Length: 107
Length: 125
Image (cartoon, rainbow over all chains, first blue to last red; front, side, top):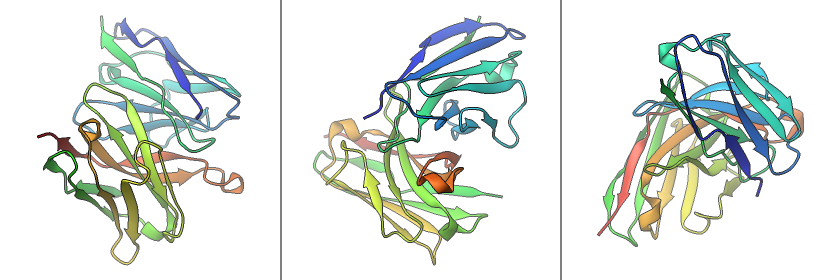
């Protein structure tokens, strides 16, 4: 199975801050990397697919980059609605595996 | 509007069974691969299974292979997951998920673009 490792596991930030979350795959997954936002009690939301393509309706302050094994999710200017848990996920091979998540909290 | 709505969760004893259902609307169901993903309390997301457009092909995570069965009814726009021989560690919120294939030339490589609100399964004696 392909292992996905996210860092950091948690971080605190303030509204207006910019930040980057990283995700590393245990092997080359080309660009088959997706990012999701999860909030308690709500349906998870797809943010980025194919490593860098913004899902329709997602604010442009979110961006993704990377290929092969190393990927990043960047939020350029945090808004109150952005405090959530973020997961990367590879779709290169089954089983489709997720990172362990990054919990973003308000400082 | 695209919607997927899960049902069928509940409390079940270890070794028991449940059948989860997912009603889809707002899109042509037969044009999409569908999947199930779960999240155990305090844990991350775990992909469980997917089913092809016609239902002829299925894949499972090792953790549920031989115990869970995914199926679909395209005429009814519905997805199901039969959960048998349930264990304590199957306790989780189960999500019905639509799969968006963004590179059809490369097989089933896509993203989970629409999720339901989830249905909760609790396995406990």
